[in-house]
Image 1 (cartoon, rainbow, N blue to C red):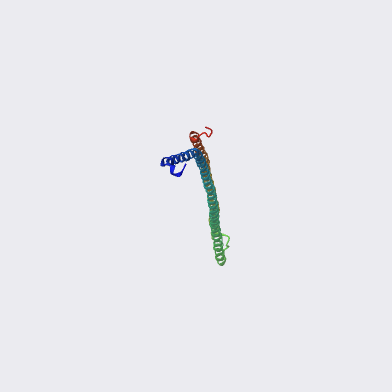
Image 2: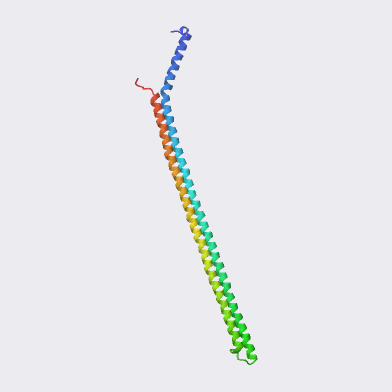
Length: 223
């Protein structure tokens, strides 16, 4: 056939045949492309779920780590405060002891003065009014010294109780803080596990939908 014998109708017919062939090829490939897209989407959903689980795990680890740091610092501070309480109590007790010793020295000086006056007057310093004054000084002084000793003991006891209360309170608070952190960490890890499970379910659903669509649209190559 010569070129001049080819009509526009023949050209349009050939073009239509080519277009039909291309369209048939696209239609034949489309189901496979859709299935591949569904598979890729399912894998992305799984990856996103594992990524979310990783974020939850990092948060859980940070929660426990920060709680441990906080409890350690609180207990160190409580130990310092307890030590200060004990030191202050010991200083208070020492002041009471010094006060008692001062009372004894004052009594000794007072009785020495009584004995000196009695000797100067030619009176027996252990008898009569001189002896009575000394005995009264001794009785009064030792009563006051007993009170200062009791105050010193009380200061030590109260200081020990305050220090113990501070330390025990810090230990209890540390236990509560760690318990709360562990509970929060468990919740975060549970959320991570749920994210993986739900991501897997969504991925399976996406893949099943892709397989279903593929089965509906794929053409049998043997027909």
